Image 1 (tube, helix red, strand yellow):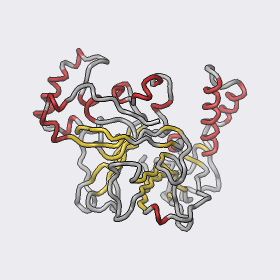
Image 2 (cartoon, rainbow, N blue to C red):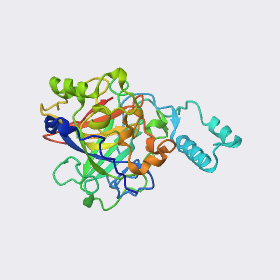
Image 3 (cartoon, rainbow, N blue to C red):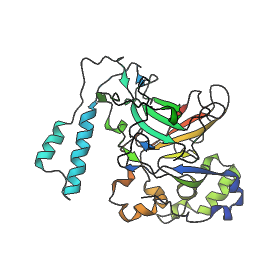
Image 4 (cartoon, helix red, strand yellow):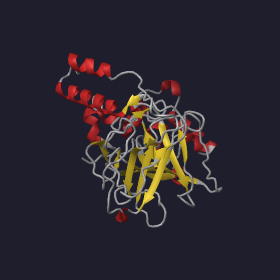
Length: 332
């Protein structure tokens, strides 16, 4: 089923024509649980990975324990089946089994520098995802993997691996894909999802606009004390689409605008936004029309089961001059 973002509540450019200079287009990915194949675009699905190419691993020193990957999948399967079966959820036998899966786990044979196979996060074909940034010449496929632990760079940083490739060159696909025995948490385990890409118009984050335009927008929104759930606000309703997306503008609600510069000195562009939610209470106007009837009770709000940081958004930036240069991350 396609996903359709409702028209914006107002035509903000009709009210503020100078906002047209700060317009952009993003592709909302609308991931939903499914069974994507290795040749399809997906979140958390199998990758079109050559049989003769080593699977990427993390070798940075950090603890290798927390949850068993098999336990994460078993717990999800039990809960999903239980809630489909009954409004009361898991039965007593299932609750006991779920309780046995709780707690931290470790594997004595796994040293802190033991290679950890990365987990697939996303696979994006240019044929499926309009607006996908240009990779190296001739590449039409982007694959994103990450380490299932957030203990890199001397802190709690995430570690992503980007792989651009020409899909037509992958003729012999890796059948036995390595997986980590343990993961830092279930938040790193993306549920296999098919995509429903949709192009939408965005406008630059409020604090990145010229101060004079910001002031006019604040005045248009009215007194904050008089705003309610029906109020139309620039930032939540008219600016940046929530959820997983390609391109567009990054939202920066916690740190304010940040200029991303490549190590080569060139600017960087937003490649991908990895969101913990498809929407929240402040961005309900972006809920796809197809999800509105069940938006209060369905799992469409957190379809991928991925959670970044404390439930925020991970922005992945690449160099505008050379996409093979080191990417940069920004977590909000």
